[in-house]
Length: 214
Image 1 (cartoon, rainbow, N blue to C red):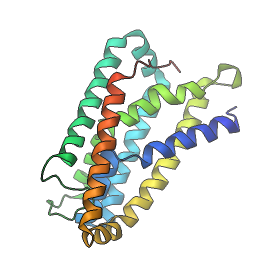
Image 2 (tube, rainbow, N blue to C red):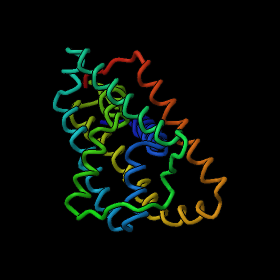
Image 3 (tube, rainbow, N blue to C red):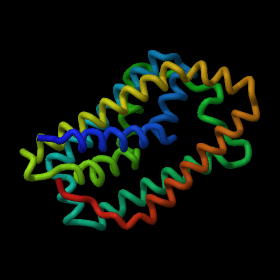
Image 4 (cartoon, one colour):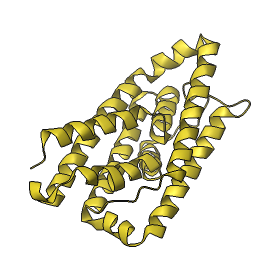
């Protein structure tokens, strides 16, 4: 069975990753600010489904495919790094906007909100790295059924991520108003987010770690 140390380790990694600015956070915050908390919650449902798809695919052997075909894993990793780099440029370029900056966006219906939350997470390199490279390292064949361990540890990550993202959705409006009254803080937040995204892009592109088969 899964050990307490493995659960705590996955929880810590999941917490660190969900608190790092990325595509999921940017989408959920922007929707919560412009369309309300309900829109953020519907979008979060799509994000959750994306995690479940990654979790299921990994436990059914996608990580084995990436181990067998490392070029495929490299392609996906570089695509994710390019995406993060693009997000970093959007934040850092002259005239760029903070994710917490209130701005007009077209209102979407629930179906589109859910679909965009799903797509955003499926294209999120952090999600891919979490399920394909990190969680399998805490799965031990001598501790019980490998697939059961994978789903349990993935469930821990999912709970941590959903809880933090829920708090972000609930607080997004208040944070946006707070920062809008403090332009210097808003710029600092934008530069910090852009820098973090840029560092993540470079680290992901240059990381030589290979996926571990579950």
